[in-house]
Length: 385
Ligand SMILES: *Cc1c(COP(=O)(O)O)cnc(C)c1O
Image (cartoon, rainbow, N blue to C red):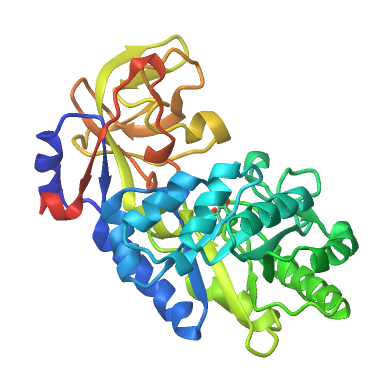
C-alpha cells in the first residue's frame, strides 16, 4: 500500500493524522459496481463509518446512495450531493426533529425500529401534510458471529422489531394514513467475515416475506443492511473484500418477488481498508515483562481497540532493524489505550513513524476530545502525490 516515496511526505506532516488512499477506495467501489450495482442492486453507504467529504465524493460518483442514523448525517449526505431519494434513515432513537428533517428532505425510506416510532412518524407526517415511506426494521434473531458489541440481529439486542410483533403491525397499518409501507429492513451486525449468517438471513427474509404476503401487504423493496467485514490482519494481501462472494449469497438464496428491489447498506467494507492512522513513536520504555512503544496517537483518534478489543495491524514505516516485541500504546490516561500487545515489529526508536492500518471505518468519526485532545488532520492520496 505504501510506496516508499510516500514515507518522506508522511514525515513532513504533523502527527498523528489520518491518511486515505482514494485509489484503493475507487478500486473497492469498482468491485461493488461490478458485482452489485450492475445486477440492479442498490447500495447505500453507511455514512457513519466515515463522513469526510472527499470520501463521500468518490462514493457518490460511483452511484451509491446513503444510509443515515442521525439528522446531521442526512444534512451531511445532502451537502455532499446525494439525492433525497437515495437516503435511508435508520436508528432506534430518532428524535422528533430528526424525523421532521427526514420528512422535509423527502428521503427514500425511514427504517422504523418500533411500533411506537411508527405511530409518532405517522402523526408528524400527518401534521406536515406528507406521506412517509417506511421500511420496517425487523430483528431476525440471526447470530452474526462477531464481537458482542457489534451484534445487532439477536432478540436481546435493542435494534428492530421482533418478528413476533408482526400481527400487531398488520393490525395497525390500515390506521396509519400518512405512512406508505414500502419495504422491510434488516441489519444483523458488523465485521461479519463468515458468509453463513447471510445465508441464515436469506432464509429469514423468505419466511418474513410469506408473512407479509399472507397479510396482503406488498413489499417494494427488501433491505438486507450491511456488516460485511474486512481483513484486519492482512490488509495488504486482502485490501478489497470479496464482494463477488458476498452478493452471490443473495443472488442465489434470496427469492425476490416481481418488481422487488434489493438494497444493501455497506459501511466498513467500503472504506475500512483505505484509511490509516499515521503516528510517531514518542518514547520506547523498557517494562519488566515487555517493552512499550509509546506513540502520539491514542484511543482519542482510534477507539476500536479499547471499545471492541479490535486489533489493527501496525506497520513501522521508517525502520527495518531486527524485530523486537512491543506493546504499542497511546498517551491517554487509560490502560485500554493500547493498540497492540506483544507484537513483533522492526526495532523502533523515538521519532519513527508507524501506520495503524485498516482505520478508514469507525476511526476518525469516533475521535473524541478526551484529555482535551485536538481533532487531527486528514490527508488524501491525491494531496500527497
Ligand atoms: C452501521 C450500520 C450499517 C453499516 O454497517 P457496516 O458494518 O459498516 O457495514 C448498515 N445499516 C445500519 C442500519 C447500520 O446501523
